[in-house]
Image (cartoon, rainbow, N blue to C red):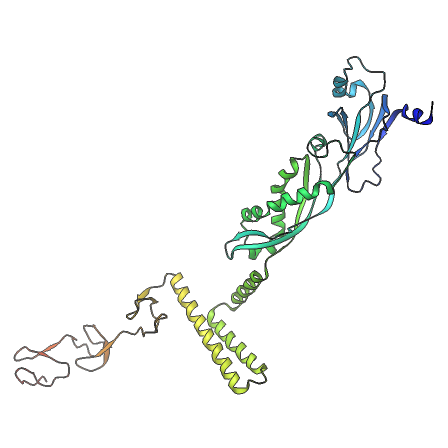
Length: 376
């Protein structure tokens, strides 16, 4: 008998996986070298391991951590598959897989392409995000059926690509369902991470895995959105648009002073532009605030536009909003056209009548145009 024939005929009496340099190995197939397992062989399963016996492609018995003696009593499924009714004496052939059940930590995830979310402040926004997660095998039998099959070994990188893609595809739904605005996301990483842990765990569960932790380390937005956020922050600090007008004026003076070729003329132009722009924005903002707050509105007598009550000029056509005036028929003071009594002397503002013939008199008439009677 040759040495090869002798080795092949050896029986396996101890089955174990030391897992000393497992690294990211999730599944390790015990190398039997076509040898058979003898009756009452010893199976040693260490902590964070599960041993799965597979007979002709069918999952048989699953063993947790501990020291097991392979006999009919503790191999019920395999005994049925092999037809051992009263125990077995001869060696048998079966595939043994050790599944690593420890946590695989510091797994990276991130958005290769921007994810579009709908925000209440900025509408549709493209964001990028990245972070870390950890997972472990929860059900070794399901993991064998759904993922690694009959491979000799299986590493974390064999499945993490699919897991990351699945999480990223659900990220936009996660952010939308959370109700957190883009402006507030940087302060809500912990809350969003907790929400993500609950939302993404079913993705892992279908493969016999469990998502143990999920962390969002960063959420970024395009530069133009960052600029809008900065502008909104500045306006929030300013408080109102009158202060913004003053700020614009000060900036114009500063820019003009830094312009060596501008001189006094440059300062004047810069100051004028700053004041004009600031006043225009303050006026527009005040009008918008008045309309939004439900302030009373009146119609412009020229263009019929809606103007906040109390405004001196129409923002559309520039027409003065002051009511037309006429002179009091008695004291001559300017009063609003259409009033019935003078607020100064109390005189009735209707047309005066001649005391003799009753003819209508003009406000400044000294004699009746009909009979010549003096009006005073």
